[in-house]
Each structure stands twice: as structure tokens, then as C-alpha cells.
Image 1: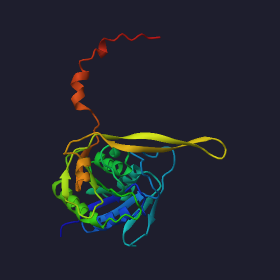
Image 2: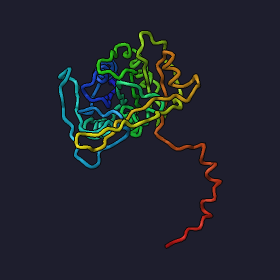
Image 3: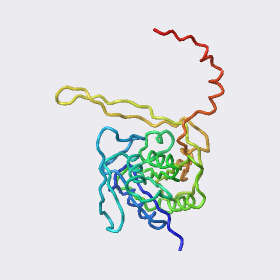
Length: 262
């Protein structure tokens, strides 16, 4: 009998979040699942890692006592690092992160703990996918996401991914999804403001607010796909080099500059 794939599951909303509970259910239909996820919400944590405090990993029993689950005091990236090096006895065949409560499309991928966990796995040479549902509510219904999560996961296991590439998958929260589209990341950003207030002691404090602005009108972007009822799949690489700019920078006279030593 063919050995089932070993799948590492994590997220950034915390191990108790409904999104990861749904993801665990789907992954159990595909392979042998081990969960290493944060013990508290880590949204917007990006690719942070813990270097100045201790980390704890504790076996927990939530929905099923046979399910191998570990709660971690660190960030999503910490969870993947610890999962690979301390929890698992072999390298996983796949890492999946999510299902996130809320969008990780376009610029949000930079800030996303969900995607940073997937990218961390990709750095380790492990095929990885980050899944997100466009609903921020804790009570979000993830049932409609299941078939798309399963289809995309099975295709990654069957076909593999190029070295250094992970998938950023966003799922619209609508009654009828039209299908799946392979996309590029839209050029969009947050126009941010800070709500300034004073605490009872008279000290200023701030709440970050803002409005999401899509500056990209292309019909091949994740934002277009989501707006038109499709699941968006964006291949993401952790190599941030702007390769197209190297030739231009090489025309600069950087080595002709005199450096005056003090």
C-alpha cells in the first residue's frame, strides 16, 4: 500500500480557530496530518520569528484524541520551524496554512502570518499552500471552501511546485463560486491613518485604520478574480530580488566613487 503523504498544518489565527479546524478535516481525507499552530492569534505577524524569549510546544487534544496536535507559543513561522525540526520525525510532504479568516490577496501577502508560514516551509524545500477565506468573522462558514482546498492540495501533491514557489489561495465568501483562476498579485495598497486617542492617564495612543485601494485594473489579477466570483491562486516566491533592475543598476558608477576615510 502506498504511504500517505505527511502534511504539516498551521495557521495564524490560533489553533482553536474554525478555519484551521476545517483545514484539518480536509487534510485528513488526503494524508497523515500533524498540526503545529499558535496558541493565540498571530494575524499580521508577517515573517516574524522569536529570538529574544523562550518558545513552548505542548501536545493538545481538541476535536479528536487521535489527532496529533501541538500548540506553540510562537509565531506562524516559528510553528513551521519547530514542526520540522522538533515535532516531526521526517520532512513533511506538504505544509498547508489557514484557512485564514480574511483576505490575504495582493499586498496583504506581505503582512500575512498565514502566508509567512507557507513561505517558511517553501524555504525548507517543502511544497506549501496558504488558504484564506474572504470573511473575517469567527463564525464564518468554511464548508463551501472544502472542495477547492482539497482540489488544489491534491494537484500540488500530484504535480509538485517549482523550487522556491508556494501558492497563495484566496476564496470568495459567496453562495456560488464560479471556479479557480491562476492569477498574478494585484498592485494595491492600504491608505492608512491612525486614530489618535488619550488614555485615562493622558498618554497618547493610536489605533491603525485605513482603506484598501486597488490600483490595478488588469483582468489577470487576484483582486479581479475574487471580485468576479473566482478562487484566486497566485504563485509566490520568497526570492524578493528585482531581477529586471540588476542590469540598470550595473550602469551606475558605484565603484568610481571616492570614499573619504576619517
